[in-house]
Length: 317
Image 1 (tube, rainbow, N blue to C red):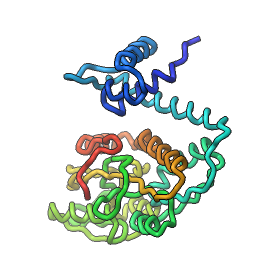
Image 2: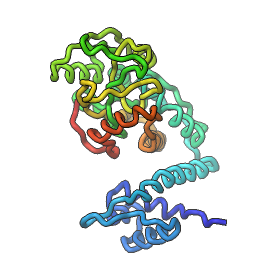
Image 3: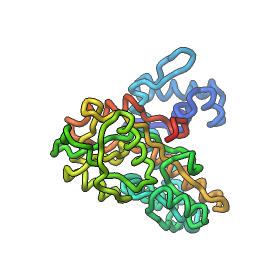
Image 4: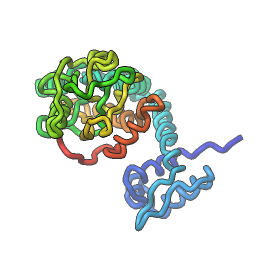
């Protein structure tokens, strides 16, 4: 029978990756740097692979380290869920959560499912509205926490995820190059709509807005029917969509940042629990599967705007 992985070693491993160094990780896990190094040697011996590669004065993850990281996060998260399930001091109360429907479609199933298992006595009230409306609700005290598109010019939020923003069309319907680009986008104050129009304006490409809706389902339907082009984050890509690149005449777009807005006055333990849970779920979220012939397009965009760790600052749009 194989010896199970050590939870403490995995926690230290994650701390090194998240903090960026063995020294900072030692502070996080309350160990000496030598103890941290010893744990990593033992973990490498256990898996039989080198997890870190020397890079100048620091260390970076090896390919095997990247592979282990995904498993380590899942193991730690499941371990925490198991402990919480038998905690007599479990959190109780109500959380009013807001999210745009496109984020709800991709992120909320895992967030709700896992949080409900960990904190079964917490009632969740979910509101699906565009980011500007959610920000207004937060100011009025009608929500406790909101997942929004980060826009520091309009609202304050803590960045928890960054991913590429993609031009998309139907994989089964070609776009006429001799006609204005038909767009399906959100309302005038939609951040992605503004970015899409500004980007096309910058390269002098004509376009026409044919569909306007806050519903990601409606926008996706227009795209999949071959009636329009749109912009969606990588996590919102669907089967049947084609990612358009510079070769198709569509310039690169800035990345999307997802942020969390929090209302003051909510129980600190409850707020910390849901915030940490959302951050962990979004950080561990993998890109959706795409058709093999589209994979190169997605990779080309991720090379231009690589996914970054939560909290890193990127250009504001």
